[in-house]
Length: 219
Image: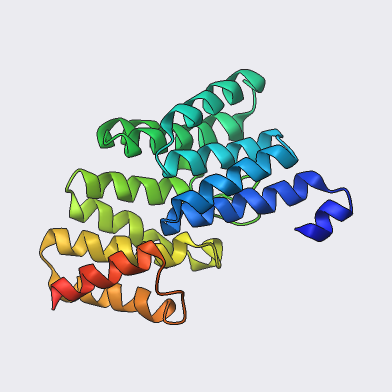
């Protein structure tokens, strides 16, 4: 990122910064994620940076700031189809999901469904974010079968997700979904797959600690 700043590519550097912040948000490192958003917006508060910043804030529970950014994005580029149908739908769903309104989150995600396997800018790979949030919404609604079907898409489309963090985290989602169904055997396999992928990860990462605790309870 420093090299991008030195080369005066502040937008690129800010995108790297906010992408890292989003990753930390999904891992459960809330404070680090918020710091990353602040730094990215200070560096280059362009539309693409704001999209990922809003998503990060929604994922760490800062609904007020996320909503304000979503409203600003809607007004700034109302004719942008990718922004409207993919990102704004995803952002609104993330906000509702954090507010424990899984039903409304699922409604917002319907608009993104036709595009969920795409690679919309500003990301450089497919994230399957609408799929991931839909899976989490079904988990919140205690619908293990539907949740498992969503998280399974990550395993079915590894060529799209590549090394984006949600690809690994989807295994945790699968484990939780199977546990909801009462299928302990499949749940254990899903958790084991995740723990194998993350065997060298920092043991203090919140999502890893949660997964280990949940896996232990299945034994």
